[in-house]
Structure formats: structure tokens, C-alpha cells
Length: 236
Image (cartoon, rainbow, N blue to C red; front, side):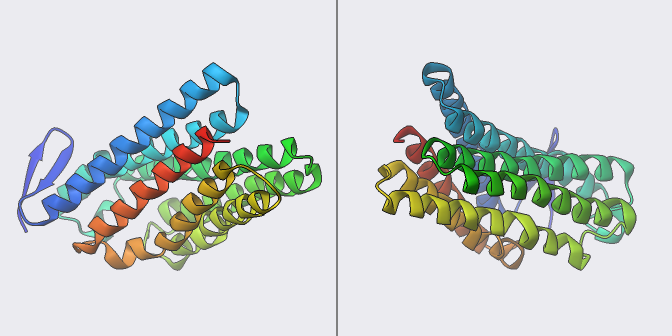
């Protein structure tokens, strides 16, 4: 497969260009969603909007780093994972990317815990906040061990990290959102729940679909998840 290089962005010459376009659109949407939610926070003072808005923005930045800086570094080694994982620049930016992804989930959990708090469920909110911190520590420990400890991003711990934090965290948000909706919550809580339920379902599919046209479907579902989150927070 041949590639063109424009600045920091690696542009495939094959059908993968369609996947790249979908990925770019997904990333742009995440920035838009994040800024709209932060504007909602500025206008209404909603901590829920603040937490979710910041979380989506951090995820968008992580998305951008993965598609630009990390992609460029990998291309310099012809995408040979045994080589690029030892590049100090790769290690630094991959670490940053994982910090941002972990922070995305941590802030999202704080957002749903805020909803629990305002509905009088302080005890449950406390447990969600505790998991947000403990899960983040575990996630980063597993990912950074793969990046710096064994220099192997295909190590089982790398995938395990998302099963320890990203997937359970998304399911917690979905369950809490559905519970609040059934207790008489607004339509917003239902939409937030559906957003993170989709995210929990598609996370394990990324590795299986990577390098195929099915990745277009993955990014499409991710965009639906982002839009549901935006509508959900705005309708609280």
C-alpha cells in the first residue's frame, strides 16, 4: 500500500481514504460537541455540561494525536510495530494519548455522578467517583506498562485496560442514565445512557475492524454516540 504525506497527516492512496475521511469527520464532530457543551456550561452553569464537554474535547484531542503525530511516526517505520514502539517520540505521544483517553472516561463518570448527586443519590455518586479514580489509575498503569515497560502495544495488558475501565465505565454511565430515566428523569438521561451504551458495544470492535472498510461503520456509530451525548446533556 502506498501513502502520501502532507504535513503530519498520512493519507492513504487506496480505499482506506474513505476510512480516513470518516475518522476526520468523527473527530471534527467531537470538537463541535465539546465546545457546544462548554458553551452550555458557560451560559447555564451546568457542571454536567462542563464534565461531559471537557471529556469529549479531550477524547477529540486524543483522536487527533492518534491520527496525525502517531500515524506519522508509525509510517516512518513502515508500520512495523516492533520498531516504532521503541521510538521515544512515539512513547511520549502514545502516553499522552492514553492520559487523554483515560481522562475522557474519568470526566464522563464525574458527569454522571453529578446527575446522581443532584437527584439525591449521594451514596451512589460517591461510589461512581471512587471508581472513576481507581479505574483511571488501573487503566494508565496497564497502558503505560505496555508503552514503557515492555515496549509492546500488542501485549494483552493493552487490551485489558479497556475492559478494566473504558467498557465498564461506559456501562456504568449507561446503567445510571437508564435508572434515572426510569425514576422519572428527563429524556436527556436516556440519550446519555444510549450514547455510552453504543460506545461500550463498539469499543471491542475497533481492533477487529481496523484496516477494513468496516471501520467506516465504527466511526459512524461513534458519531451517533457523540450526537446522542450532545442532545442528552442539552435536554437535561
